[in-house]
Length: 255
Image 1 (cartoon, rainbow, N blue to C red):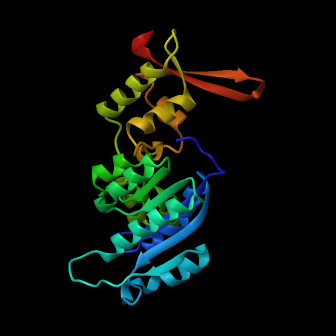
Image 2: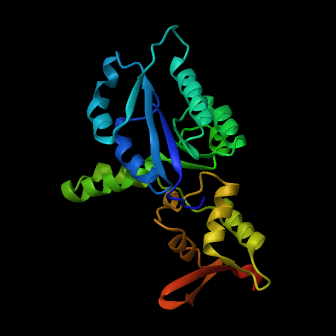
């Protein structure tokens, strides 16, 4: 997905499904894609387990929405989020939504919002069911957002446990990912087999909404591709001036 910093985004958060420790890094991530105009979080705030949210909400100007659990076993929070999302949609004041939950119950909501022309960003843990992930334009795992915080704490306190928790969240580059990148390069390549990096990134997300270089331990797509030098070659072309380079990728099987 292209970064469009002028997009007006509605952020709706399922407090029952997200840890308060993820909020600061998540809001920083959202700022890369647009401006959060609606920021709401849903839960039963009478429950003591949500008390830790108070300072986090104040620091990030997020509005808590009270939702009582009327019936045991029924998730009233999900219903409230879905109703509010549709109300916000019909105001015509936003360009997209950020749905923060690991719950597959929001699959239909994400699909419906996209049918209405909205950009939909999903945020959740790696346990999130696949149907919800693919229903979003882009899905971002919360584990990769807090990895920088964990690393910083590790460097300050030399805590081995924190470093281990970061490595556990990093996926290996397997044959499936190599195949995904190869076919995507070939789909958009010119006659000589070269594909522009920006176009490649967009194509990868269209095919696999949860694709993110950070899932594999790389901050950007370029170093991820460079780590796969057996499969791909890179051409950095000067554009305009020496400081401005356009990156192109070609599959070595197409040479």
